Length: 148
Image (cartoon, rainbow, N blue to C red; front, side):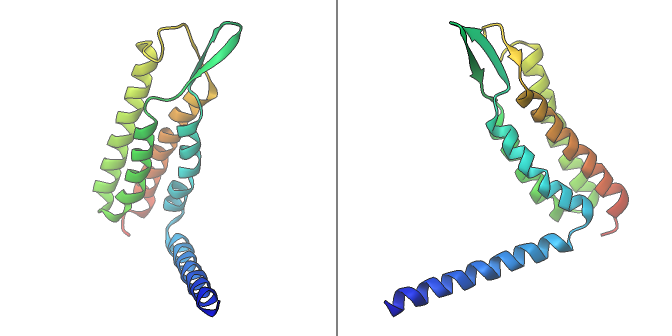
């Protein structure tokens, strides 16, 4: 029994140190990098919400985002790019977000989300707003904190 309690105590201490380390790293970031990290929350929400719906058989059927996996990739790039030089960081972040946005807009304009007539839901607009916010915050981080 003491062995189990000792293991749980060590596991708790390890988790506590890791949480303190993560909070300390977060607090040391500049304000725009904090916003980038916090924008990952609506990014994960954007992955899970439907982007369109269509009405058939007297009920609505929802269409999920076929590019949801790529939004997760965009968030990973946004998080990892801060370790590069400021110009490379800005360039990578802007290109990745513009590429995602271009394909998302193309998907709707080409009417490839569904063969059935559909209407867009708020999830589609959230999938546009998150990369646009990522792009704006990345540009602001570059303008104000490029010397760091």
